[in-house]
Image 1: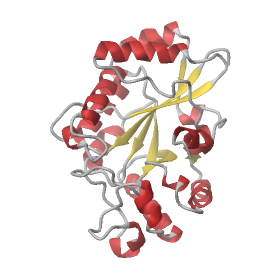
Image 2: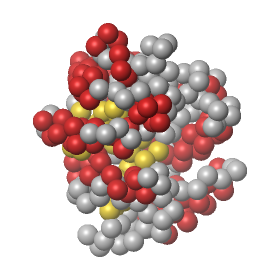
Image 3: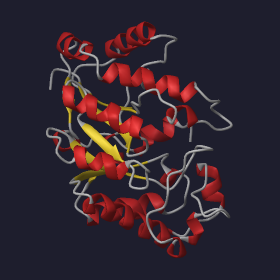
Image 4: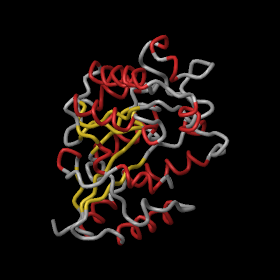
Length: 273
């Protein structure tokens, strides 16, 4: 492997119609996205799955979700609520942060019940799941979950995405005030990729829309996430990637084509844990 290689992953498919549209468009153009992670409890999953299951040349993943971080848009549990009470707040929703969930001391067996239900929902919708990753990595905050999750993924014969985390420096392209500035930062990020290295590049491309504007909480005022995800959308559909991949001699990979050389330690460094 003389060239850099990059596992390219779009997260949160099924979260919003605007995310589905952006990711499907990116997959169709074929330049960049090779892995798509699906939220089983996302409100737009069912509609999106009808189209995603027909997409070729990508790996589909289960984006395990126990945390619903936004104020106005919620990811819903898939298992019956009476079977997973330790995962839910007083309103019957997922907790809004890793710290809130960890403080509730959720039961590992209830987490695995929810994970089973999430996998079953994707399968029922006709999606062939190749790998598993997790939304907001609760396994790094809940004692015992990291090992339990590793064993659960292995028992399903699926690829464990936590074994593939390896980041460049900067970890991801830095945001810009405009499309032009962001694209320039992508080129700076590409220059940081080293030959004979395999990297992880995850993103959340989402079209600007009324629903995307609702992605806000106390840490992210309305409009911030909408702008960032629109920039990622403009990037992943851009024909610039055809030239970038050629000029930097980069191979983009599905998980099923990649090598397990990274670990959750890279995520711990990213989160300063």
